Length: 232
Image (cartoon, rainbow, N blue to C red; front, side, top):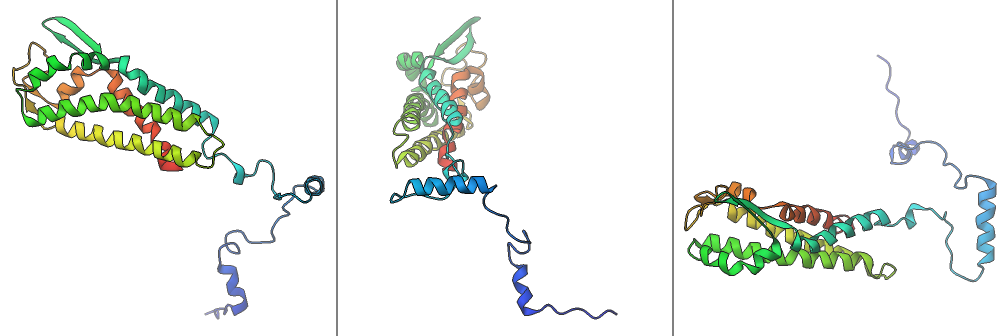
């Protein structure tokens, strides 16, 4: 049997990260002598002022949130504000199509509230939370727009952006609570009211059948809006 070679103590350093993963001699920092001379000349030209020896496109100076990301999230946040006027509910009652916006629901909240008032406590809480989310989502959209597009050069820009992102997480948490309440399947106090999609019990399926795309759009936008809170 071949005799196992013993590792010399002075060679143990090669087992550490760097020697083992990237072995060999380090490459020159400068791509060429011309590049090195260019930066040396820049340093000499700024003698007496603060400066750093690094390339103009160093990853150290890379933006944490690029322009494309900011524009996409800004446009999406604007949709949160516009969601007040986009279709929020859509169903058929007694053979006629009934559809309206979120702000239209707020204007008719007294009528809807009178019906829900005869229902269970959970049904009342569901309506209250739905109204709260109709109001909160546009406000969060405004907060996103303000955080994304004001004070870009200020030191606290990214911190404000992160706080605005957290508002979207809170909004998503409230939507989750709304879904949990809906999933309890509460009996409608006056039956289906001629609305086939509603049924005798208000369930999550009923919720899906009578709501329109603006509510689901809001949820998607909140997911986009929370990105700064997760990544910054």
